Length: 79
Image (tube, rainbow, N blue to C red):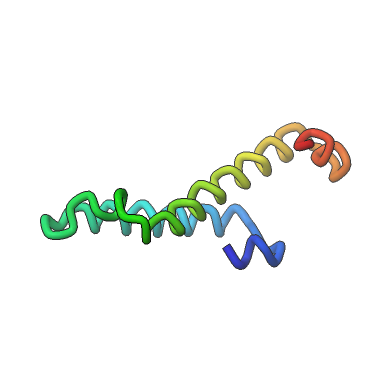
């Protein structure tokens, strides 16, 4: 999240965090003691919002690259 706020977001960050989040959550769910807690507890909402935010940001960048938008066109598209 800090890299996004500093303007250092790349597709590589998106791929790395997605892999980390999905593998980590899927691995935690495999243990009977943990169960579905990673998807139900309030303390896991932060990482989940970062995960969803990175997906939204990456979707915006994909649209921008696909349609070859300038900065001005992209801002008009979002707002």
